[in-house]
Image (tube, rainbow, N blue to C red; front, top):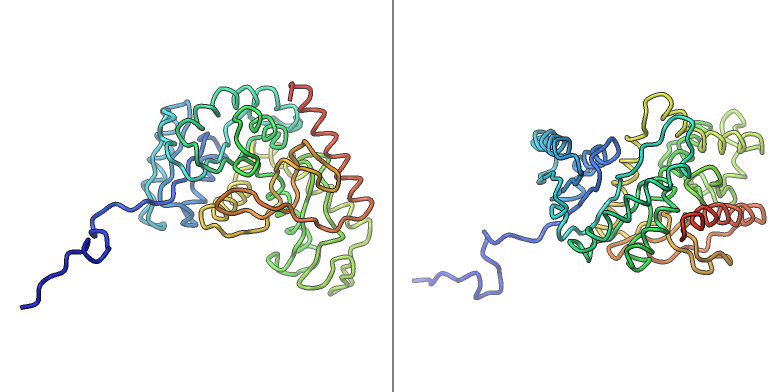
Length: 332
């Protein structure tokens, strides 16, 4: 008679033993936070999603509403609470809570209220999830990210901002619209502040393998200085238009956030223009700005030395000065 094998005897865990699954925590159950949870669930980015918000009724309702749709998504577990313990042992924390941007208000105008919230909430988050990768999404994201690093004491690899991932998506969308080429074949980045001083890196942009500045597509849709200036202005102004029309941006920023989540949880080593603490990047230091960087399980890694024209380097330095001056106003 054949003797049955004990699973543990051959180094295998019993089938009913719970396995460690990826956990995403989202701080703030407003328009951005709840939509980001939805986007991450739809993409199957994490098996466990925790929503935290000080408004218990709102966060519990958002989690319940999301949970009712799990049948139609990749399998996951969703919980919502006003107890910060719900974020315990998270692998990644997306910080979306903050003051709401009003029509006509710049992102930098939001700094004071949002930094106060970060000072109140972030230390408690680090206590319950010390090993998580932290991604600041709240505006003004570059100043908030710099402040969060000082407040938390976390290393600059472990905490960074969502930066210009969304802005770069807007840029690629507009380039695709101008050329008629699929947006997935457009490669271009916005660098600098996530805000009014951001700049497109035209010199390194390409469509397929064709440098963008050499592009002459159907109908002669080349990128003249006038075309580039119009597109850059539209990238900066589009958020203000959306806020004026519907009160908040949520869909695209949630999808951009879900791409960052996947890069971390799946350890993709994906190149993303996130906002991180720069240390002698083309001579720029001690400021959080967006430049293309490698993002994986440990957070943000190498910042890529993208070739910059003299004008682009001057623009990046100007953006750094603008962000740094605001941070100094708040004692950072």
